[in-house]
Image (cartoon, rainbow, N blue to C red; front, side, top):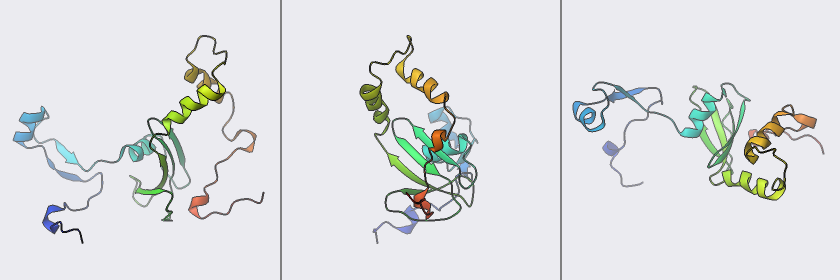
Length: 157
């Protein structure tokens, strides 16, 4: 019990559902066109996963920014205390999400630790690292990220 009256909580809706339309007062205050549909929206990391093409169970997104997210689309709900569990924007899919909110700084640590003296040939070091990574195919040397948090067994060591 939170003590919040039920009438104060809006109904649960999908992110694509129309909540209403921009009122004349809101249009005057914001410059938006009166009558513009207003939808529920989505969290940035979930929207970025869809934008990156994560559309079916098993698709994975590793996202670096201010935060670092590793998300795997799945059609199974497997709660794990180490992860956030979000709904995907595609009905029937879920997004277990391992997020480190300051993780983007890890890339700068990597640069300072391993690439500080790299010969980048005048390029920004992050652009140079992107080029180096692009020279290797995904899964290079059998490198994979195991989705152990989806209940799958890890291979024998």
